Image 1 (cartoon, rainbow, N blue to C red):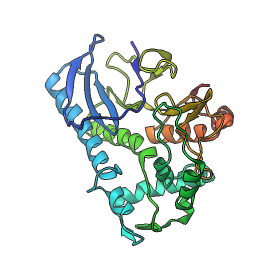
Image 2 (image 1 turned 90 degrees about the vertical axis):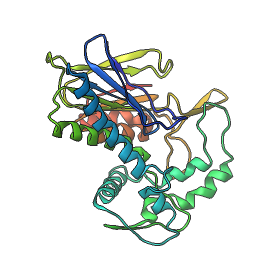
Image 3 (image 1 turned 30 degrees about the vertical axis):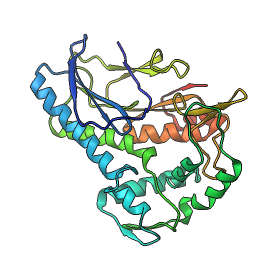
Length: 311
């Protein structure tokens, strides 16, 4: 039975608890909430106590990264940056590495991937309704969007007053890879980490069979799969609009925004899933493909990436 990729969903209750169960296929599943949605770690080991400890390592890493880099945490790095009122902030090595990666993504995407565009959420609420924002409200935010306006000279970052950063576009994939490193350091070879639809396999199951991941049908999310991906080692990330969209007069507006216009990318697929060596790389390619709109397929084929697109 495939492990279903669960798209991002909001958590109404923050609880740092892990529940364990044994799946019908014999592996242990640990489930918890982090990073804005449901997370799970699958281990193919017989010892439940060992599984509890190992899954706790992965969950702890997810919670650590959430605490450090969520824009909602008032004691975290992102909150500190966003409330510096134009003053420079000196960052630690981990935060600097993430900003270097965001800078690289911005350059590789010709500015389409931009961690300062999160401020556009003040105008947009992708709740499945038909409530489009006032175009004037979107336009008023655009002077506060643009990584090119930011002064980043590692390890110092200075945001112009009124600007913000949001690492949500890379944070979950980064957490997956970091949790995988924790388990690898503990000697785990047969595990699958799945944080809200972004996954990494440390190796096949104990019987040498791959883990099988099911991709949600965006028209029946949470109820049906449209494709299964076998994953022996490496990352798989999915980007899509199954849960975050608006729809008005028959036109669907997905949550992937063009930072230059403040409006959703036109012609983007409903869902893009990509395999890569790491979850971060898979997520980057999936997001870049969404930002390409109707050229998503051509982009991924040119990159030679194993992928699956739903239009």
